[in-house]
Length: 137
Image (cartoon, rainbow, N blue to C red; front, top):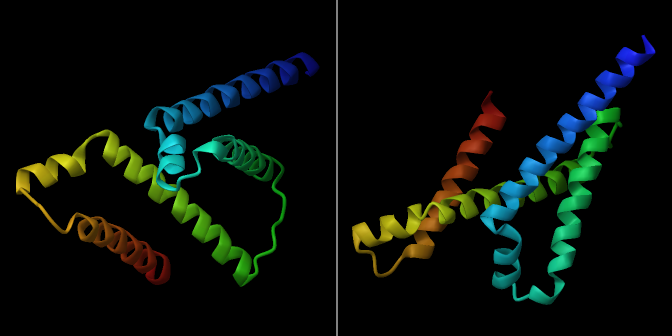
């Protein structure tokens, strides 16, 4: 029984490392960290971004694995929602930029002005859809 549990624990740990490596490789491939640092003019603090992602992923895994209860106050939920939204928005926009979807659309539609409005409209549409799904389902 002990050998079986040890082997299963080892396989689970290795699987977790593989999945985490894939996620971090995906984030690295998209170039989210350097892009955020360049846009916010904080390139000299890029190691802070990397540490924040690493610590956030580690704490999230510990929380999920050990089922640690968290305070469900309104302020806490608002902060978690804000940071999750920022992360998902950065990930989605980095993926879209990586695939060159928006620049191709701008070139094909021959847009010369209003590109920030298009990006804002996409973000507002995503926000509205998420709120609608959250509040009415």
